[in-house]
Amino acid sequence: QWMGMYQKLVAYKKQYKSTQLPSRYTKDTPLGRWIAKQRFLYNKNKLESKRTELLNSINFVWSMRSFVGIPLDVHWMGMYQKLVAYKKQYKSTQVPSRYTKDPPLGIWVAKQRFWYNKNKLANKRTELLNSINF
Image (cartoon, rainbow, N blue to C red; front, side):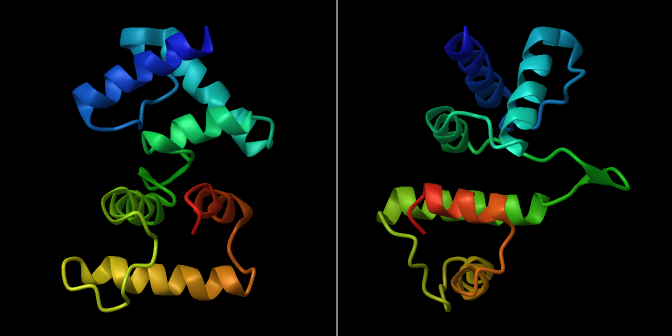
């Protein structure tokens, strides 16, 4: 059941290049509801870690809350997704702070590491970074 819905989401992402499927997605209402439930469970720390890892592996967007129509944390998640891609390519999250291929990524990683080491990141961000052995 869970894996079936996960596979539907993987297919959706392959087609639309995004996991930002609204809970009221009319083409597949059960998938929209399933996604909303995964976000709810995750935010309550009740989603199994293996499921969290699977969803993270496809760069699942955990927050769909918005301000003036723009999802919160979109920038952070976008940079996190770039870091995940970097790790897949280089087998490391140690992005140089002066990374010439993507200077904003190098700066972002340095800032995240600074706040991470001071335990000043939101729990969800810390969990995401831990999931890729930051």
